[in-house]
Image (cartoon, rainbow, N blue to C red; front, top):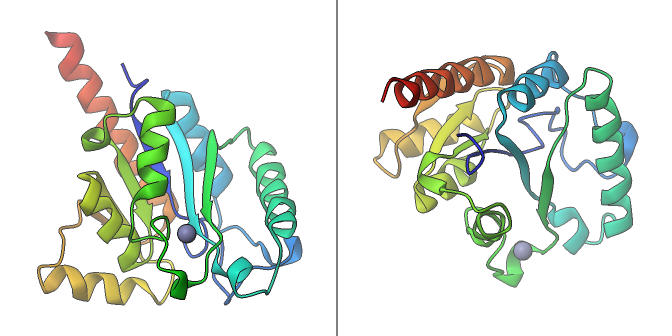
Length: 194
Ligand SMILES: [Zn+2]
């Protein structure tokens, strides 16, 4: 029943510490409990899809190969606790390029929806920045804000100014996953009662 459903995830500031640009594997440091939380999403049967702006490539701070090395480290760290990511979409462009993929634009999410036959209205997007919540809003997904970086304050302000609504505000990624899992289990119960 959850096959056409995904939990989209931002990376920097959501799964790992956002210390400026992450341009080498050594700089990727996960928040506590992230691999275990991802494993719970895997167990429940939803697609887990990373959607990340990586303008460090467009700015010349790293190459696409560097990004792949960093992603491999993420995969390795998650695997220690049986967590995994089903797909990764990243925007390599400089903000000045006005591309369609850089969040809050939605080309990456739309591509994932095609690739995985997703019903975006039933999907979730977890992120720490206003651009994540704005992207979620534009595709009709439920936005979940994690307050694990300083950027989350701007997202709350944007919500308070009516720019978008936020389905849930969590202090940590683990709390965000707790809430999503609870929501999904309730939906499953409703379906099985019919
Ligand atoms: Zn782009």
